Image (cartoon, rainbow over all chains, first blue to last red; front, side, top):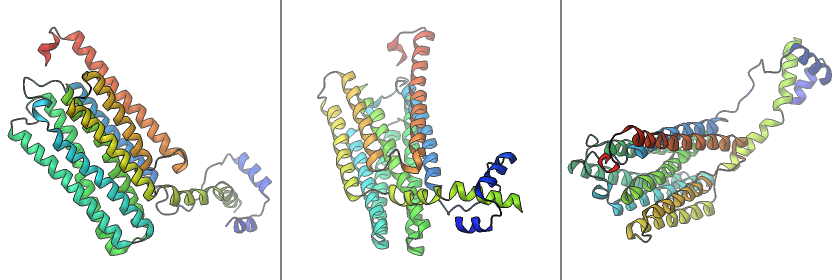
Amino acid sequence: MSDATHSSAPLPDSIASASLAKLGKFWDLNEHDHPEGHSTMLGFWIYLMSDCLIFAMLFAAFGVLGGNYAAGPGPRELFELPLVALNTSMLLFSSITYGFAMLAMQRGSVSQTQMWLLVTAVFGAAFLSIELYEFANLIHEGATPQRSAFLSAFFTLVGTHGLHVTFGLVWLFTLVVQVSRKGLIQANKRRLMCLSLFWHFLDVVWIGVFTFVYLMGMLR
Amino acid sequence: MSAKNYNDLAHAHAHGDANPHAIGHHGEEAHGSLRDYVIGFVLSVVLTAIPFWLVMSGAIADKTTTALVIAAFAVVQIIVHMVYFLHMNGKAEGGWNMLALIFTGVVVLIVISGSMWVMYHMNANMMPMHAEQMD
């Protein structure tokens, strides 16, 4: 590519760059070639970082309001740690099975990629079911989001995480269909890598949730 | 004619050697190996199980100490996930991933610790009641 430009250029490099400096043009006037999706991973990472800020604000709200029970039930009466431990393990299992899906993708095996994606979906769905079961129990006991500032902050934080997992599952099923229709083309690999970041990122947020909301709640 | 050619020249200069690197980089760095995932998983299980056990059994009598210990476990586990699952390192995307992460980490720290600090002092200074009445 550089050979072609050199042969068609009427001036040697030194004169050209000197004239360029005089013109003050150091930017590209011509749109140059960007390989498709070459900046997707960095862009997606920056999206995740901004998502992280949403969670930071929800954690901060919970940190400030987590002790305001308004004479209602507190974490000790409400939380069941064995259930939370089960939930945590579901998310952890889904993390490693997604890793296996990525390894299958690297090997180029369509069927194994899909199989591991579906296993991940099963664990993700189990996580959501347990979370919804917990929420239903809390609401049944009268510990609704309206009951106290502590419960508002709790439902907002944990619910936002659950909503992310829900959208992750929708995305995951979409990709299973995409992979079965188009195979492991470059675009699908890129999408799978983005979802991988998203999925593991949700697990990172969950570490914060089970530590600062559930475990520390029991210590209050 | 001349302006266009100058730009082509500058273009070849600026991108001719930078692009292949960026692309080659891309394919290799973002993946982990089976070993990475298994190490990450085992470490995560251990780092999850210990804090749960500490709180459920009450192994450490002092609550503040327990809270500090499980917070430390959470920080270590987050780093484990970043390294083994998210494959973070200083080189991915020419260091921009790491820079964005560090910036976000600083903002997260300021938002959380700043909020708690401000609200704690507001509660302590502005409310004409005792701590036990505030619960």
